[in-house]
Length: 449
Image: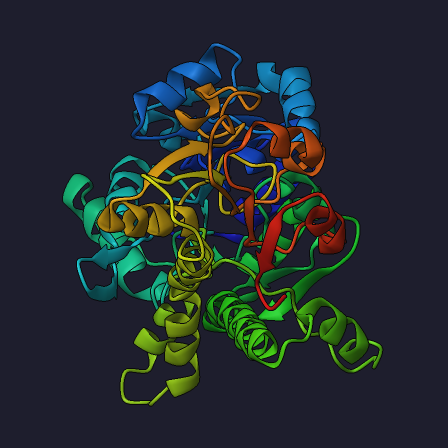
């Protein structure tokens, strides 16, 4: 089914007329906002996901996951009639565009290689169901070389197994890559405002992708990259972020030893326009920063990357550092079975995303030490069931791990009145003026404060 200029023109007409049928594989933190964004622009979108609960929620007009991203919820409520979902891939057969946004986790258990099982399964299903000239775009974060390597190979092998002849990207269908650079809690905003890199190895694919994504943004559409360049952009920029956070965390630890406030040091450093030290904190979580540097290293196994590995070591060690701050303060008291209140499980404020959360690592440490603890998070189940007004009763320490808006509104003198011992470990340096807490009888410590 070789693609002709007539096929290209027809596909462009469908896109420009908003008549193209879009299938998005993966209805998670990337795929679902993409579906809402394209539905808002007038496209019919079918989401595919292996999770039947997510599929049923979408078809019932309910977002597939809990979110505090109000513009996403509003837009979904407005345009949900244009979005359907399924656990089956039948919609690929009539699709004009297939976007792939499935997870690509690490293998785990000490194996830092990328687990491509979800990606390869999606590729095989697409290949088995694809019937005509289709634009296929990979959005998942991958080791550079994956799109035209394992993904393409799995797709084309599956097509051959179900059809009388082979297909080849660039000849029979269009294949490209674009990294999704969205932040949980602000995904819809980021889809429209964060510059998008379009990766394509031929001009027809580049034209189709540019036309498709121009509906999501009026500017910041970068169309000159190759597929491998676009793949590298995503893992490299997240590796950079991880390194920058690790630097901030190391400076914070030094500031603590020097007896100076890292928030002041950071502010004074950043007066220079060419300096931008990030905020230190209790650790790095999420699905990207914790693994993308490792994917970059995996793409060049013979290149030594000590900086990336060191950043992972520093950031993975921050929950342990928070525990050491807590332990030091508890040890100043003679306490019978101390109780610790941990505030925040999501790795990012005002989201329900607890993937690779530093809080989970801290809880493991607390369990290992035999400390009694209570956990609250207003957005993460089951920790949202705890009543915030009661969780502090007779507790000895508060460890702030996520700077949710709810926690910024707490009146700490009221909390102090019901606690047995008033210890505050600020893992996010959320309290702007710690002296106010100290004046109210609290013992305060923060990351670099």
